[in-house]
Length: 407
RNA sequence: GGGGAGGUUCCCGAGUGGCCAAAGGGGGCAGACUGUAAAUCUGUUGGUUCCGCCUUCGAAGGUUCGAAUCCUUCUCUCCCCA
Image (cartoon, rainbow, N blue to C red; front, side, top):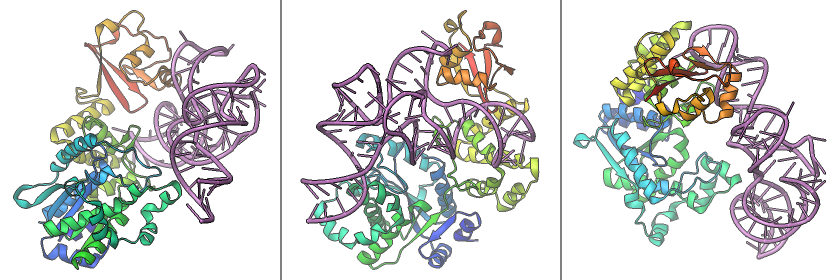
């Protein structure tokens, strides 16, 4: 099976500028293709990851992958899907973010033997000269046409600066650069990038008289059409310091049934037969599929060891077996364990609850358990006896468990 | 440059002098029901020493016993004209 069919079967493909042509080249020759990632944060999130999975499939099929870090484009900011202009990042931030992101990408894509190339568009965008650029590149862009593009739609009401308007131009220029320097003939990316990607095709045709194509991947959406990977803390990050492997595992352990199939297809490398078997499990058995899913994806991102730990922790908390050694832990120093330490202070000092009002609410609504015992009194004191082997388990709601360790 | 409309709590969006910590919806959190699911229902959703007090309605001043609401200046956005 060729790479295109693999992507198609696993549900990655959203749309292409020329599906037949793309399918043909992907099955008959080695294609050099690129995918861009803007360093708007110091970590990628699950939405980026799905494109990395697709790239990985393509690389396994023998294609040459260029991963582009958008140090230059991120200095402008992609207006797509945004209601307002994003805060401009400093050059220093961009540089740091780019380093973090490069490291993450490198975990999934191989750069050995010229199978992959890592580039940063700041290298060619930063030094551009304005007038020559306008005369040679900008002249090929029709403002009339650009204004009809979907990505500017919301911004036509909210306001769009010339700075952001140029984002699409920069991205098209990137494609041209990569075509000239690496003979890159295909750009891939999330489906939200569709309109940003399109103009690159025209630019290359006009400048180089060559035919190139773009291919977009479905965004990771839940079955009811919402963006997946949103948590109370924002995105589901790939960086273990921003989203712990346990949280990560739990996210996928708890997705709704209807999303299991898609996630298994796109976020794991499990063979399709196995994917189909798992996602067809009836009723309660679906939990087994979710366990596999959560484990597999955590393994890909955080490694086997972390995935095992997360699995064990979940087992300990929800089925009462296994070790709770790796449960999220907060520390409390002995000096703070005074005669006045009540529940409210405990949650405040350990940072488990953001405010006393919230703790109050939690207790009033019966959502707080300490050592499996429901707390009903706000002023209940916490004493040394409550710590078993210097540990105490705080349960917030049904699914959040935190260990408080006395140090 | 001229004219008009706006900036409200996490988001959308009511509110045009006291009954406003601010309707409604979304999202979040908690409870019930469950399969650590979804859907549904209920409660809750600025802080705190919790029937009180403090901070909040673009920013800074002012009027008033009292302002998200009125006035002044500033700032940002949209629309129309040039």
